[in-house]
Image (cartoon, rainbow, N blue to C red; front, side, top):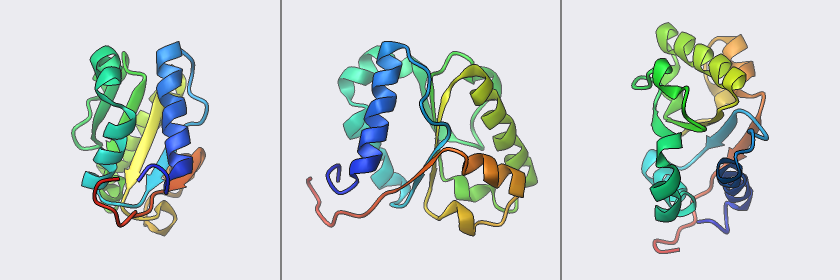
Length: 148
């Protein structure tokens, strides 16, 4: 999975190194588009492995926009939000994501937005969409291999 998704792997490892070295985000936000939530989780787990989690898990939040508490992110360095496509048709969630992105940019927190669908194809507030597309878009591909 890592070899086929080389660009995403490079960016996620750079983010990991930035956290370890105390550096600021290099690109914000990062959109990971493709695969499903389970495969993306496996992809993250390979990069953000047990060693990283044992030392830095308190700096990482892996959640959804519905569940995230904006007050609890101030001590984080990485926010990974799953299933961003679910904000379509939900103004409150779109407003919450807009506020989260503003807060993360201000506090220099890396944001990784994950979606099963291309953000360009989603019907949502255009200002929010442009903020989401401001950073880097990376497309994840199925590898077709079970144990890569």
